[in-house]
Length: 442
Image (tube, one colour):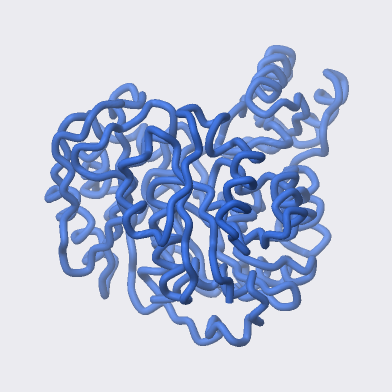
């Protein structure tokens, strides 16, 4: 096992990695920007490392500064968390070149999965279901041909993007020129790459992802997560198991996901994301990192995914991790609490005059802040993740609802009321979820 792990991230995920380091007997060094100097996880870490500045490009996106800090603290491993540099293949290579183990997949797999068209081809070659779509389209003529072959309406997507950024719908051929101009401009601005491709546009599909863990030789599935409740293509509520689906069908796709990643020699955590529509699953993307919503799987199975990441990176085989014996013995529901105006869905920075997470039976709260801390406008506005679990889906939903009501937050606007409204709505309780659910709420 590693002696000292450098944590190149912040907030809830940094706190989670600190706990995983403790679980495997490794020391932790938590990086922090100046504005994060009061973050609660810094006290729990073995040591801290200042990244001078506030802006992401000066701190958590500053690869050179991060690697220098990790070397200065004599770290033998680095965990990138999620977001920031977690899926940056060049960063992963630079970490390894500095003599530090990058806790994540091989850079070549990060590159393959980071390019959406390459990822689609890789999964299709291995028999995983992939929806209608194209390779990268170079110009308007190629776009028209690809759209006709795919069938309208179509969705134009950045080939090297994510998070729903830059996605543009064309409902018929007349809308293609403007959609192409818009999508390529957004892709270049957000990701520095104008490359786009075409997918079939699905009206209100379900977003279902499969958690996979591999060791470079074998891979295993740790079930699925339902992630359909979203705002602006960003996940808001996740749960497991996915409701109202044939168990045999879901398990079959989970097994296919594990076989596909095993076949490419994938090592570490990976999440195969799909869209489910018209009774069929279609590949969306593979996230080559830890997911924000990993706690849903942990709460339902009791399996420590982050500790498993550390152990795989340290060279332990999958067979030693107990993943084959992992069972989903509970239902789990996660609600993401953001510092944002729920009506306009814009970030709400400010000082947390009150921030008191509830301590309740069957509830896990992963926090990013503490009372009195300033919520910065520079980073993602996630305040906490509230995860309720129970013997039934209804109990898990109820515990999440109670926890949200008991969570005292003052000083910033937040989306707690919106989360409660979704969880208490008839469609959600009935398991009638889809990506347009928020738009249907009164």
